Length: 332
Length: 295
Image (cartoon, rainbow over all chains, first blue to last red; front, side, top):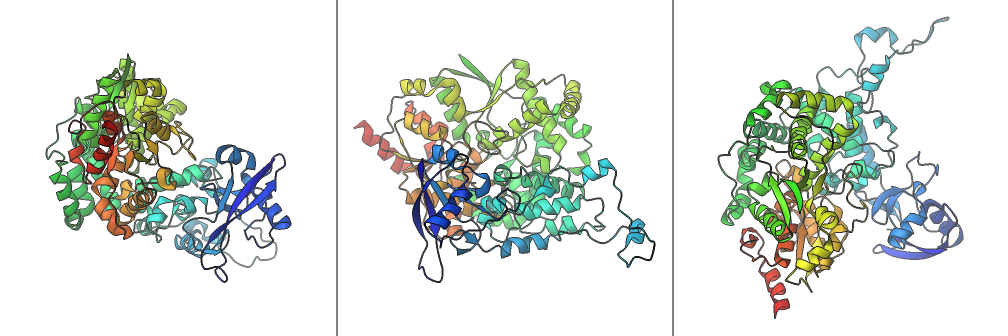
């Protein structure tokens, strides 16, 4: 079967603006999009540029937009894409500047990974003897010892360390679209992985405090795209939510995002409902309220004013009991 | 007669009452029985697990158990309520420890959950339970010639391991519904993107630029109106549209309808009944276009 590939082309040194070029390719059973691109490069157009290496979904080089969704070209078969879309449309990753054709500049992405300190901080005192030193003659290397349960706690879920840094999540992230400075799902999932590591010596909670600053964990828009489109089955958004919970439990609640979450929990604990006005006030404070005034005024003119006092839901004592059972009353 | 336990969520009962009213109107026209759930609490707005994961299980487990007691499935009209209830449902069905813990709490309030309830969003309840044929049969007003941009939002599509209504990469349910009503679905890429609502009170610029991008693209594709199945998306897209325009530095003026309002109009509801006056962006152009079909 012959099919069409429509590829995004852009060489900033020669082209004034990006354009698309179509190629016709003959497929073979099980052909991947990467196979097809390599065939185009070998047989029709040697100038088509893209990253690739392992062809086994482990190096993360060949991530690109395929028919609008970010995927690994080596893990995506041509057949189902053609069945669904009738064409293979390939474009570079979103949220990153294009260097040439399907190759993007990854510098920002990796700077964000570096920003969360993707290494173990300090040393545990009881492991001081394991400090790096030149081995004496006859001295054995001390291997750190983990109990199985502790090792599972390393990540909270068993998959976060499987990240191959392919940038699929980053390309699909709604938060990065809205704010290019937002750290993004891959870096924040790593932040979670290190904050849970029993070997990490983060005594003053610096990971959670730094993560709670603007452009950090509270800027996640919960669009679920990172989980949906991760080719390795990782859920960065779930890691981010666990960081939220960890921050709130440790009373690191200086950010608007944490105030927002606590306020919603408080509202439900009081009436069983979400009090829109109170949550808006408690999340943004006075400045937030003032900046929202024109919006609130406009909505008010249309009669969209939520009630100032909320009726309790029926059997409200059930909800109060849930808070009591979970020992959450003091957090409200 | 199809009967659901009706879970409208908080916004549709407060600032978005026009949504609740439209749902009740179309349920009546389509012969669907909605049983109110006065005991049901807020689902937690999609962020409650950032406060306490078990609290999310307990309060939503309670809502599921209330529906199970009546032997009914839950009908939702908000994407975020749909995802939250579905997530908790999946967790309780697949994780015996979570179920045991939640049932421990539920026992104290005279309830029990065994995992029998299905959570259905109204878009897919219309497609799967009521059927487009019935919709066509009951429609009295044609939406012919109206270019309608469907805005799915996130939480009825993703994660597809939990909300399994449609093809997450290329969903068709919304377009099929628009076609069933005689409208013309507008094809645009951002129909499956995020409206940004979850951070609207945290980082307004980030949040509103997402809504702005989607509206701008739909406008460029000559949409007459954008329709959303979620009241939270509606707040971002309609109530905050002027802010969104500033965020992306573009002129935006696209009317935004709740999905049940669109269905309601086709089923013969009048504009006042559907709450057309309660929108920030005027719906006059939409009404004029529909009127053309009547002449």
